[in-house]
Length: 121
Image (tube, rainbow, N blue to C red; front, side, top):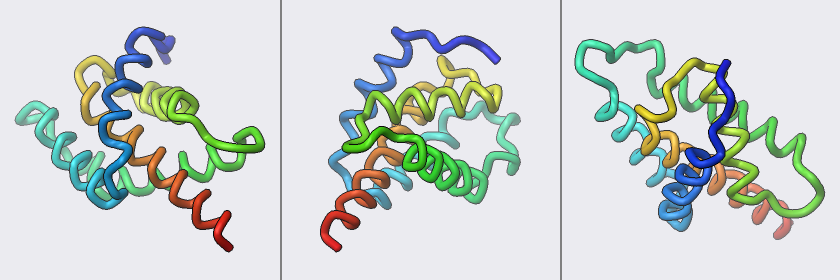
């Protein structure tokens, strides 16, 4: 496992912030498209398919909601959690920076939507 580069994390967070105002389903479609476009031909496998990423997203959302401080969840917190999860998968962050940033936005938007829905109940 490699150490998270703070400059790369900040860059991913800045990219992610451009997507967080979209609806979660739109962000998810963008992520999946970008993931496949970023994967070099011949290296695309079904190992990290749509089903894998949905399970990864769900696991991180549950983990973040369980381990968050009382109050809001910031984009910076989500970024660090997602990047640590990506590093644990052995994915090269520099090669997949854009799709990972979109994944950060997707997870943040999903969490914020969940928290908003819980406040309205």
